[in-house]
Length: 458
Image (spheres, rainbow, N blue to C red):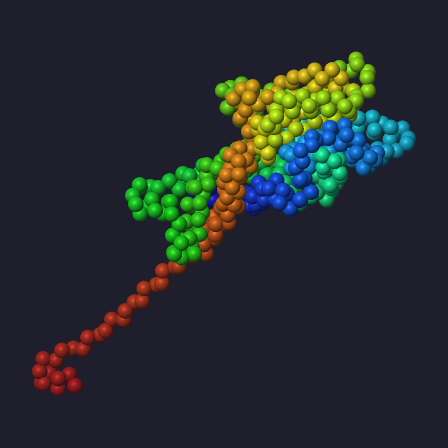
């Protein structure tokens, strides 16, 4: 077990350090943004918020030829956000000839096929404060990784534009997107980096188990228990380093296990399905990748005021909601999506709806994330919690602090473990024993019995 722990740790150590440190920073993304980005907040007023149609009308004029994809309202002191997504054109896609036409048609087909391959199956979509940033599309040219996200922050009472924030996942991302790219894929292309991170985290789970085996006290007596549960700070550096690896690793083990297990859901499909199978008692994960469809026999043009009706209805049903996001359909078959957030910066207990864009009839789809959280079964509720467990927000600010400290310890474990191994390599080898010196034997002088014999000898 010690041999396995050593070599798996050496093999995955650098990756674990990077993933852990980036995770530490990303845990408090929303809190840091709330502190440094004052344009995310407004002065509360007694007046009601403007309707989505009013905010979109103002934002569209600001953004000129772009069309809004979502509108989100938060608390009374939060800015509303109108979200936009601009697809990145492939090389040669805008050509006028037959080749350019074919590429445009191919692009449309890809987008239609991938539109609802949403990562909301694994991670919450459309966080308050990150509106219009749902990760639709897994990868490739049909996915949203190749586009630009624009958030127009507005005063929900007056419609004043407070700030316009733009970022893309690949080109010049903002700081936290850059951190997330490192956390997920080591800043490599996702097709390459994500499996590498996944394998390293899978190894890390094995290291946690083997670490507990090695930590387990051989005898439960006071002297050995003290070494297993306490750090002897007044000892030598070598002893303190060993205690930090041994003791801190034990205290953080259970938290790191949950962080690692939930993180693997985004790395491997087989892990995601297996985890759901275990939590559901043997039931398979239902992954309906098809988008809910509006009734296309109704050829009326979509009216943005329909989104106003959806918002008013949801507000009436959820007066205590921390935020409501309304997605704006771009095509006749697209539904109106709605997300109702029950707590700020917490996403597991949100309610997710899809409505026909003309009749406003609710369209149900069978996935763990659809419908009301309170009506979901236990395995679906656990799957909805996956992201919040991963970042600790399932326990609020306390959980985030725990996740931060556990990730910080996780980053230190490969370092302290390497120092232990290096110290054994450098100082652990026994010096060859010195050859024993052979004592020279003294030649005893002959005993002379008397003076006469001495004379004869002489």
